[in-house]
Image 1 (cartoon, one colour):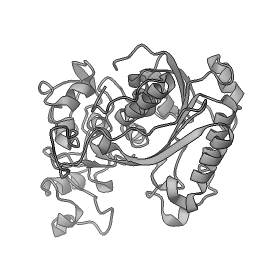
Image 2 (tube, rainbow, N blue to C red):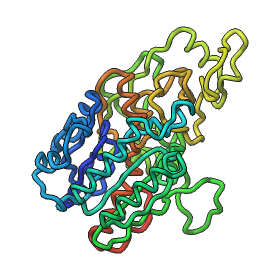
Image 3 (cartoon, helix red, strand yellow):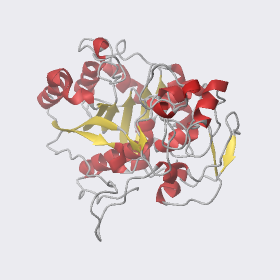
Amino acid sequence: MRHMIATHSAIDMFCGCGGLSAGLTLAGFRVLAGIDLEEKYICSFEKNFPQAKALRWDVKERAPQQLLDEVGLAVGELDLLAGGPPCQGFSKNVPRSQRRVDLANNKLVSRFLAYCEHIRPKSILMENVAEMRNGYERTYTEEITSRLSEAGYKVAHAVLSAADYGVPQRRRRAFFLAHRNGLEPRIPAPTHCSPSTDTGLFAAPKHVSVWEAIGDLPPLRHGEGQELTEYACAPQNEFQKWVRQGCVATKNHVARRLAETQFARLAALAPGQGLKDLPPALRVKGGYSGAYGRLTKDMICATITRWVFHPGSGRWGHPLDTRVLTIREAARIQSFPDGFEFFGTYIQQAGQLGNAVPPLLAFQLGRSVLHDLRGATHPANQPVG
């Protein structure tokens, strides 16, 4: 990834493979540490952020002061504490009967706040699924805003769509920004807009489509791919230029081999078709509405999930090839720079992607926080840095 001269420090709690850290780094932060309990997630973080401490910690068992001691900072010195506490209790992917306000993972929101209250960073950035903002009669939104306000922070929060910030994906997430020292946090304005929006001389760029994101990667049959992949052509648009970050090749572009029936189902579908369009002999009894869906070149992808490796779990079929998206293609749709490498099994890598914050969205948020901390004029909206 292209690194700027970083003068402001950040720590990424519940870092996963490092999507949030990737965006913050591109914005100009120096990430001091990432914390996660999942071994393969923290392995990918460690490989991609060698200058940061990769801490495989259970934050329920570790005191906030231990984190400060680990990075050599005193209370109040950290510029940004960021994180996305696990969200299973809010997610629409969890059956409604299993969503409860008292789930153990939901309580990690409170644990994150305890770290904020002790460490007293200058700024805080918290991410979670969109449903968290209004769920359980806004229980967690009220806890977040009241506790941070009592600790001397001004708080802003919003549900943002990643597509509005240049990410080729309709991913909606809740974000909370907080500053102390009297600074007003500002949610960055969108940088991209829907093609249906009225255009004008100063109109924002349109949402990035699937093919604009992955069209320069070489075609593959299922089961094919090499460890290092050269591009099929020169970058065809601004997104492809940005995501390459100067790379001449990329990794993780390997197509998962499908079972015979899975391949037959995808082969029977045209781009844009899905489960309901399967011929009778290949139909399944039930499944997600987007199961066995084939993408089209011009659509914006649905939210990438940890099940992106399985054609029966969503619209993951390639627009042209009879296969599902590769890890690199899914990473592109998540806006991970091409120099970012994923480690572990194919399924583990898919899990890392599905749980990550899109780096390009994190970049825009981090850029906004940095300008606030520097007391500078708020940045003009730009598609990329």
